[in-house]
Length: 171
Image (cartoon, rainbow, N blue to C red; front, side, top):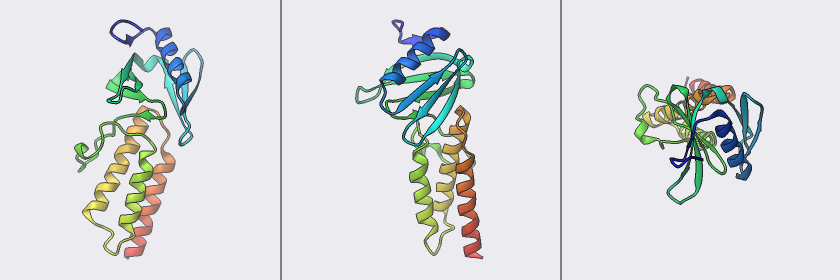
């Protein structure tokens, strides 16, 4: 890696990504000359990362001194690879204050948001502003995941089915 910590040649970026994932405990990779498939072991998600989309790879450290890779992609997108997870920015949705969400989220975060939605929906007055905000947060994470290449169709179906059952219950 160069003095600035940035790698921008395709071969160098691929080498840096594969090396980092090889040292991680929660990610696995397979690759060819054009794409790296990154498997996140915690939820079995696979992200196809096209090398042609990569602009730079930066080795960085978090507040605790743990290393992570920042992958800068075309279109001003960023992916963070940590020892265990693939991080990304949530997407803005109408009516959601992004400041109420972490700047970087992961697909396992959806489970805690979905649990909070289910809990809110189980109360007698289930269609509250809090429930709407949780639903928007959920979709913000789903959209962020889709924007970097995750397939989130199952997660879209979960919340659609959940909301349909609530409407039936309240009718």
